[in-house]
Length: 490
Image 1: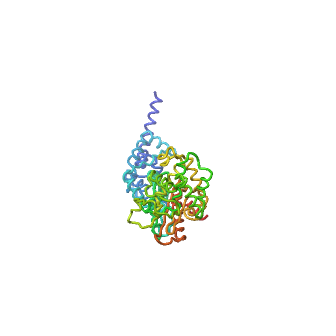
Image 2: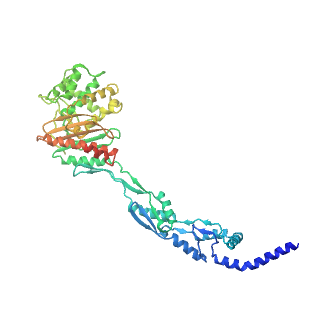
Image 3: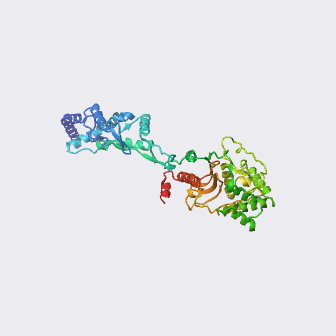
């Protein structure tokens, strides 16, 4: 009993002796308990206001934000950024209860420091203001990607250019992280994504080809069709009549396949082949032999069969009423929407006429037929087969003109078939080309009505139109133009 009383007495004396010292010590600690840090830093403020001032001085300074190499100053208040000082101080005070303070005081008496307890930085911001600020930055610095463009003054393509787009969602954490730093660490790199250039629009090809057609000192018609997408360029191609020339040999040969149940053989195949391969008048002679075959010995009847085939598939502006080099009277006058068009005066041959659109569509039909689809198989399900159309393409591929006209505008190793034709004042060429972005057909007719059409003038026009079209499809595959530039350097 005496021992307990004595012990109690000593404790009371000890408390009485230490109480003034504890009071002085606790008053000196300020509002933050000893050993407790805020955002990793000791706060020595005697009042809440002083602690808040210290925190705000550290974390409410501007941040340097970089959009690539552009420096932007962000003031925290612009996005409603706040340091939640009261919440942090209240958490510190919760830690500093009576037991914690007594223990810290005893450690102080023993010359030791209490273990550190840190209150993490607690912040908030206004999401709407934050997003508005990022939107302003994007509007100011984003560079939208640019598709390839037609340089119509030089007839070249300007490759597309990549753009830069701010990724706002990915940039928010970086900015918030910078706002939580101090001193020189208050720097943020925005997340900027590179946006690849989009492919050129088909209207851009039309704009380029229109400019090239306008540069030709005569009448020019251009028809381009992408077989898979159905996209078309049509420049004076529907309603301008031209002499059909040797381009009409395509439907003449096609009519043979519609007559036969097997692939042509013997003399007939030889005539068909020479019709395409001959560079002299012999090609017209053999074409007339084919017309005679179609007409059971009558070339006029054979010509009518060819015209009927064209009309059956919807090509109403093209016809042939007599064999090549016909010296007799005109068998009949054929009026078409095109040759009744008063806007154009091209002096077309009354015996054999075509439009660029008709011949382009016919070549499209032949290629599609070889691929097992399209108009020819629908209109003639019992008369034509994909094998026959493929055989026609093989014969057309024998055309010996490979370094001029439309073929000269594409790489020499590209697959193509084409058929051309010449008259004194009119030149034409129609081709199917297996291009960088799929198969397309291009049909071009040029005329200087009543005047001799100079070869160099027409040939350079054909080459330019073909080259520009090939390059367009190359840019559809790679809008940056890297393939285009490498191809030009070869």
